[in-house]
Length: 275
Image 1 (cartoon, rainbow, N blue to C red):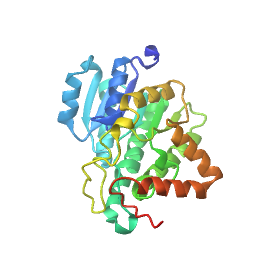
Image 2 (cartoon, rainbow, N blue to C red):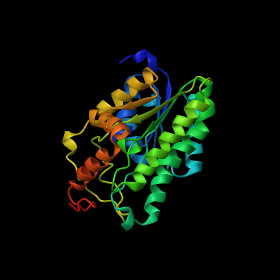
Image 3 (tube, helix red, strand yellow):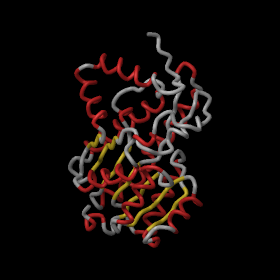
Image 4 (cartoon, one colour):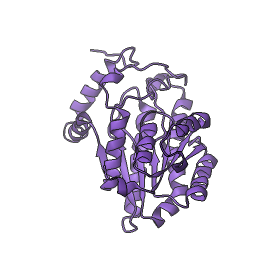
């Protein structure tokens, strides 16, 4: 990894207290960047910061990205502390697991508020500073941002929305030096499935998948750094994600059958197979 490229760059990471966000923050600190870690748990962030090799290069800001004022405050504190912004990584997000027909609509509102609106709020307030430095904006989506996953209506909707928003932003600033990357890591070992919301809005408290067989958050972080270094527009990390996107274009009905079958196979899946 090219340390000098990230040295002294100011990088904001939302959802930085666990999973991909935490691994990404740690990686950029090791690459001598100045990292702003944002999440709803300030105590947890401060404990993580204390264990960092360069704690003076880390700023922790309590942020609920679903709250516009929190996002505005995150950007203000970053600029006041470090003098500007080079990279914004919109990573904070929540998932869900339920059939739409059974779903409390507040679940979709919560997903859109956190996943989509959190990305919009942070991007809106950070954009002027990032444009000054011809920096980067990243949106973390998933395969669910390219195809609709059954049992994940709100999640897919929010990730589709992020992709559409950021792709449009890239075109708007085509000649301004702005780099925008839509980043789809696929299934990653993290706690997002444990916290996924059920039909009534309660967290499921367990994961239906074998986390040990998934890509590690650390590997995802390294791939994100690669994408930022080479200013990639889009990254889909897993072979199955790349194949799914391709076959969804050429054989959409086949992909629908396969994804229905795969999601129905999950333990205690809300998808009930009829054949």
